[in-house]
Image 1 (cartoon, helix red, strand yellow):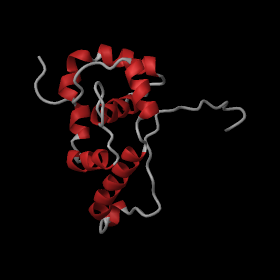
Image 2 (cartoon, helix red, strand yellow):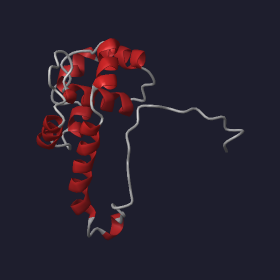
Image 3 (cartoon, one colour):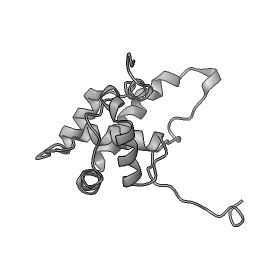
Length: 141
C-alpha cells in the first residue's frame, strides 16, 4: 500500500509554487484555460523529461500506466496528448523561462561560499528540454 509522496513529488517540492504562480499571473497563463493549468503542464513536462519520454503518445501512455500514483505526484489525472499538444503550442514560453530565472536566483546563494561545490552560477545554465536528437556515433564520436 502506498504511503507518502512519490520521489517525483518530493523533487518538485524544491520549486516554489508562489514564484511559479507569480510567473503565470504575469503572462496570464491560466486565462480562459479549462482543462490543463500551467502547473499541471509544468509537472507533466517535468515528469516526461525525468522519465525520458520521446513523444506525446509516449507521455500519455506513461501517465496512464502511472495513473494510480499520479495524484500523489501532483497531477490530477492522465492528460490526453491532444490537450498537452494544445497547451505546448499555445501557452506562453516566457512563463517557464521566468520561473527558471527565479529558481536560479534561489540557487545562487546556496552555493556561494561552498568550497567543495564551486560553481560559476553566472555562466552556468541547466535546461530541461523534452526533445532528443539521435546522432550517428561514427560521424560524431
